[in-house]
Length: 64
Image (cartoon, rainbow, N blue to C red):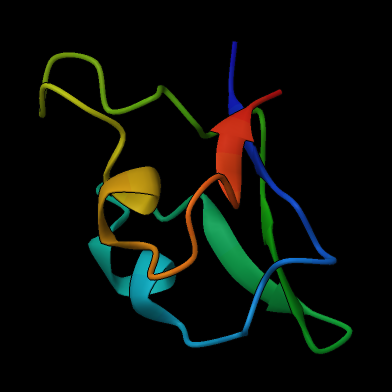
């Protein structure tokens, strides 16, 4: 499974893009999106998905 970004809640702050250890997050059409083929939910690297951990808006990065 991968994470996704709830577009209506995203403030486009870019915090998640730089924290993703798999470079799965990118800016597309002025919104951040998570590539599900690259997202590993940070398993094996962190205890929690880093996009959700650093996002300033609660419940914006959620399991897909």
